[in-house]
Image (spheres, rainbow, N blue to C red):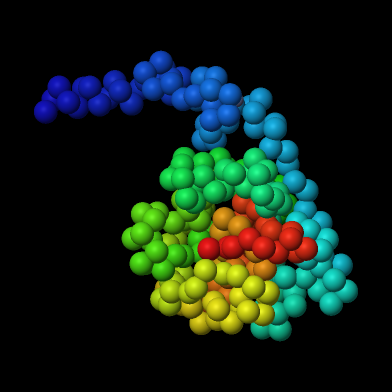
Length: 260
Ligand SMILES: [Zn+2]
Ligand SMILES: [Zn+2]
């Protein structure tokens, strides 16, 4: 027992860099061995530069930070067209295009079980939130939940993994129980109205989030129907502000993807 205590004491003193010798981490893109200082992402600094930062714009009507001018018309954007609440903003890492590097990574995380991609997405989204909201203190991070039957099927919720990685990068707690999907919905397809009626009433809040500023995480925002419904539930549970953070959004004119 004493030997174990001594071993533990010395192991905890080994600098992270030394662990690279025993557990080398290759860059996901080029295969070069990374040093621990580039963690928690999965790309070396050179390859990380290949996924450029994507600047957000302001909605003309409400001023929310959004990724796409096409999301905003003179009547408003996804953040301000709902009469019951106003989203604080929608932050993404880039557009969702078939065959683009970002989209391939999302699909690999979602269907290819490359769960470690969530670390890169979480880290990058954390940087994006800090860049876009430098003066805001967020209280909680929550992922768009999967229905338990789909969770059983897939084994993990990709949005939840991203939320966990974001929470680690930002030092903010991620609460799984804040949202629950108690009705299984059909895979999302069709226009915004159809998608909205598909997810309407599918979520419930698992607790009170009075006056909390919450980051709501999803992998892809398509029409905003799913994240919008989750936001409605969070606002009804007392949230003061909800900002959506997603890996990508489907540009409005190319609305053919699926958000689930
Ligand atoms: Zn690399
Ligand atoms: Zn707006």
